[in-house]
Length: 65
Image (cartoon, rainbow, N blue to C red; front, side):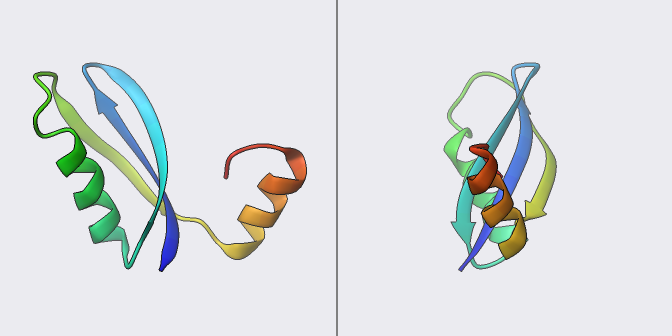
């Protein structure tokens, strides 16, 4: 499993979620499925593979990756 950050818009507001998935397509599909039932418009903006070093750096700074 890999860690991905997924940026998307829901109802005109931008959001970012971090999740574990096998690949980028699976990460995007999981986020999209979470919001299919919403009445608001969903738009996928970006899927980013978080590298091991990025996770360690974010942890050291107390920030999400």
